[in-house]
Image (cartoon, rainbow, N blue to C red; front, top):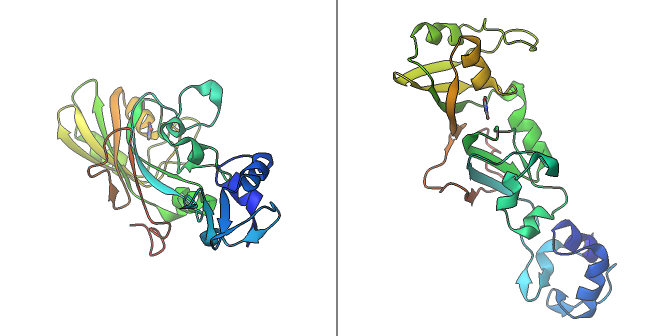
Length: 234
Ligand code: URA
């Protein structure tokens, strides 16, 4: 049971102060009964606003097809963000909807967004070794020697403690490769190629665990059930 004004504020409907006027205006019911007192406690599934059940009262988990040009940061000064794609009410939620790990501004592809912080920790923890597949195009023809090097678990990147975990490289075309990582260090794919003299020109994340973008169009998302990862990583 939660206070109605707090519930509405946390789900991004309005401020706690505005919740008072919403209640006064008769917009909120609990089990069908008009509620006027903001301190009333109710189970979220019993609350309706303007005759509609509450919007995802238990939390959000989204699989977004990130376009290039958007950052995953919440810092306004870093420019347009993936969160700008979402409905205003979701952007106003508390806890905030945030990305599970990050993709660079210039990287497109599969990005999970959620307001469930324990899920973020679980899915980004190196312990869980969730495989992520990236498709990279590079500035000159790839060499098969990269396959063994990336798979070796000996490659070191400047500024990182210890070598990178083994990563699987598949060369699809002379300048196009798929790279599977089980960790997510800052700019990892670009830095891995750069360390060997290749410049990544385009980068796209194709999958996260068993999740793929399927038919999710760029700039849109599909909702996942909150328990999507309860049986391990799909
Ligand atoms: N590696 C990168 O270099 N960039 C990303 O966005 C993700 C992985």
